Length: 155
Length: 270
Image (tube, each protein chain N blue to C red):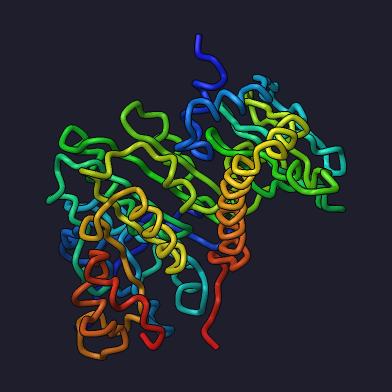
């Protein structure tokens, strides 16, 4: 049976981290499982966790009256769900729901922030890795804002 | 070069604004068409537009076009019912290099109606499946209701020897698939960059991001092919409307290796 730290070695956001750091992160982690439709978190709730999806899809949603729940983006295996644990006031900005069975590794925000406070080099490294996730998501979102499939005539 | 009259023998609605027409010539046989080629389709009395062929390549049978109604000519073509007569010239242009890349992994990346000019290449590869490595189809559209050839995508996905990944830009909670942009699918696709060939069609900005993703995966520029759409009017290299740097898309394209296109795509004036 693979332990959490060996599972983390294959996760893109943790690529290149030494084994002892992975062990440190694993100390703040647990395996979790969600059934189809189950809610991981709701907008406004305390954001004291982030997840790495190992199996399945997680839909990030927001409720838009009168359209109902709109899926902003889906997060797939190997990707990270959540960065609000890093920044005050540590509140989720969106809802997250399992599309089908989801297996993930959940990381405790308090635990990790404590370890980063004790080891600023680790904190800087993690912050850099999450910054890259944010940059990628922003780039994809900007591409979608362009409505590239719409019919746009030259001016 | 005068258009030949073709009769519409089949018509299928694909999405809210897109139809697929099957056409047979009134006289003689339809030409043999290579995957990636296009024809000039003429709605008599209205006008003519270049449309990629979207049916099985290199075989006799109806000429198949998938058309999106975006203006008066394409609207008239889409409105043509079985029995109506349209004019066709062609085929024109070069083709996807599918016959030259046997033994390679194939990655098809398509956005929106971009899947239409790639479908003949997919048909060819699936008909000769044993000659290729892994086959991956990455496709995206604006919303689930804009997905082209949905039943066909599901059939391809149900095969054990083809990987199909689909995403949409926006969806409500009734959609249980991926939401996000097509280029994002490239990172998770299973192919060997050392031996893969990529065929890419979609809005140019989507193609740009897709190419970046493919290059990041380690595909060399010379094994990435794009189909360009640029103001083609005559289709025979005379009017110059489709000029792209030193090339004419109707004559030297529409399929280009990215290595050839790369210096041109960054030039805003082009």
